[in-house]
Structure formats: structure tokens, C-alpha cells
Image (tube, rainbow over all chains, first blue to last red; front, side, top):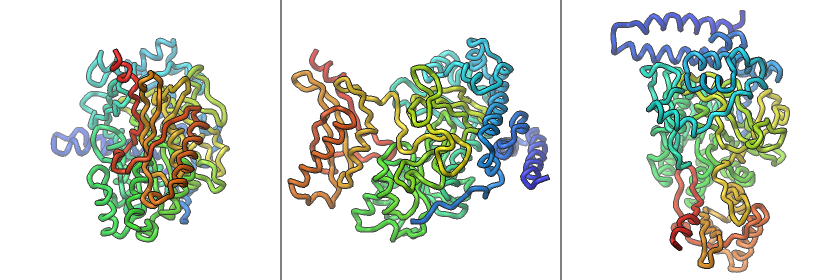
Length: 58
Length: 468
């Protein structure tokens, strides 16, 4: 597995973890978790863009 | 002059996109188009209706030729949709509460402003779509970057750059709209350090002139400069070369828009003017915005070196995405192999993107302000100009060009000034087939443009109205 694949795998793990934060009952923190989640999904889109299989699923 | 920092294969994320074959890139585009079509089919009634009108579903799109069967969408479509379902229209495509930024188009067409709702994901992608071309132009973390374009406001051009500089890790100084030109020069003297400038073509001209008036050669004050990145307007190759000479670094250019959610393409390390003097090529980030250049009459893709209309499709935008959007922007298209850099990304020519709708019809001739810009600013004695189309007392359409000379050209002998004006007049006639009246005026009589130059006024409608 390449370093590139490793980075994408870590980003996917972060996305799944961050998704749980979106359900936070704390309104002060929830919007910031949404900000974090958006950053992570954008990084996945940027990182996975050279991979047709990922492009089809992300 | 310093060369742009080579980035080929430096980024593991970019390297596959730089090295893949054109066939591999086309397959990637089809996969991403299919994914985006499935998204809009599910969540975007505007585009679902558009596809249904052509009797197409996502499963029917198996090739780029299939994709071109989807009808174009236009500004008028968006304005009607917004009126029917205010404020975002039925093309928003995401839950309203996920919108964190509203972008509006400039409204300079006079028809109305399109509205775009962007999500957290989209704002991050918009930032990347600014960072990527600047990375290609040599911007690196910690470098001092001067943003001469007014930040914030309503447009993507105002919000994208600060986001791009932030994720670049650059030391950003947002001076656009905040300081006068002289105050900017004062600040740069105080900072004593600058690596990168982001500015409209016109403003880069103004800034360089301000240095010249003070007797400062920019490259002497700021010898660490790495790159200049131009946006918004075309320019003559001779002018870009003169800017490179004054600043001793490569001039780059990007083309972008709110519909593209940032930059759609930009020059590679070869810059805006290639070593042999030909115009540079802007490489399209096709995997982020699928970009067609089509004949506006037939809709067919144009061939190498031909001009056509830019048609955009977002591939990674969620809120208010565009699908086959007719931009009315005019560009000269080249296939990927037209550039020596060997990337598989198709290109449009630098320095020449114009509009289909700012064309002036003068005495039966189609006149592009850009064509006049290119003739006038190829003469280094000229500081600025304005053009006015009007109807004279005899009811004839006339064009008046008011020109201001640079300070160092003011002392030219009368005969030299006559020769200069004749050269410009003949050059304009040759390019446009229109003989225009030229008049020299002091620079103070002309407006100063801080962003996009609005040099032309067309008084013919009011001129005719006044005669009633």
C-alpha cells in the first residue's frame, strides 16, 4: 500500500469519526464539527480525485 | 529572472493527474460526471428537469459525447428558477441549513445576479481551487503574499482568495480595496519582503506604474519575489514581458468564475508568455470542473487553436452546482499536447479570454475592447485609456479614445507624439476595421480602476434617445 493510499485511508477514518461529532448536543461545538467535517470531505475529494474507483464512490 | 519552482511530481496527490494518459483522464472524467449526475438526479430538481427534458437519466451517460446531449443551462434559466423558488431556486441541491456562504455574481451584465449557496465542503473546495493554481505558480508556506483583489463581499472572487491563502499557509496581506496604491507601496517598503502578488491585470499595471513614479525598480526593493498571478483581464504579451522585467519573476494567469467555484485553469511553470514569445497556455483542472469549449452557434466542440464559448460543469461542488453552464466567456482552445509540459490537461490560451456579450457593434464591425487594449498597451508610453462610443450631430457612430501618457513620455516632442498616436490609430484600424478618434489627456482626467477595468462606455442608446 502506498503512502498516498495510507493518507486517503486516514482521511476516511477521520471522516467516520468526525461524522459522530456532528450529533453533538452542544450547539457551540456542533457547528465547528460541521466545519471540520466539511474540511475532511473536501480533502477526500481533492485527494481521491485521481482515482476513478474513489471518484465513483466519494 | 527566477524560474517558477518546478512542481512536476512533487505532490503525490497531483502526480497521477500529471502523468496519466489522456484516455485515463477521460475515463476519470466520465466516472466523476456519472457520480455528479446521480447526485443532482436525486437532490436537484432544476437539473433533473433539465435532464428529463432531453429524455436522459444518469445511466444514459456513458461517454463525454453522451454528456454533451444534456442541454446547456444559462444565466436566464437560473434567474427564472430563483424567481420561481426564491432565494436559491430549485438548483440548490442541499438542505438550506447546510448553506454557510452566499455568493452572488457581479450583475455587470445588467440582467440580474445569480445566487449560489455553498456548504462547508464547498468553501473548502473553493479555497483549494484558488490554492492549486498559486501552488503551480510557486507559492509556498510562509511566503509573503499580497492580495490586491478586494477580499470578502459577495462574489467567489472576493471569498476564495483569503481561503486559498489560508490553506496555502502563506503570510497573506489583504490590501485590495483597503489601501490606496501609494499606501500599498509604502507598506511594501515597510515590510521589505514579498514573494507573491495576486492582482487583476489592470491593477498590476497601476501598481508597477506607482513604483516607476517613485523611481523604484520593484526587483531592487523586493528581490525575493517568486511570482505574479494575474486574473480578470487580457493583456498583450509585450506588456507581460515588461512586468516580468520590472519584477524579475514569472507572470502567471488564471481564469475562474463564481460558476467554476474558483479557478478553472492556470498557466504551468512556463508562465503567461512562453520562452519563444508565444502566449502561454492555461491548463484546465478538468477533474474538478469538466470544461468544454464549444462553437456558440452549433454547440460542437471547437478544434485546436479555435475560439469558442467556455461551458462549465462542477464535479466536486454540492451547493448550487452548475451543469453545462453557458458562461458567455470566449477562449481559444488547445489540446493537452500543445504545451511542452506534457500534462494531459487540455488548455486555453493565456491573455485572451474575452466575453461574447461585451462586444461592441461599430459601423458593422464586431469590436472587442480586449483587441483595442492589446494594441494600445503594446505601446509602452501609454499609462491608461478610456473609450467612448457615441452618436455625433450628424447621427454617425463615432469612437473617441482618450489616452494618458506615462510621466516619462510626457516630454516627447510633438512630432514623436504624433507618430505614437498614428501608430496606435493604425493598429486599432487594422485589428477592428474601425477608424477611431484619439485624444491625449492628463492621467488625472481618467478614472483609476482598482479591479476589473471598465474602460468603455457606449452612449449610443442615450444619444439617440436625446434626439427624440
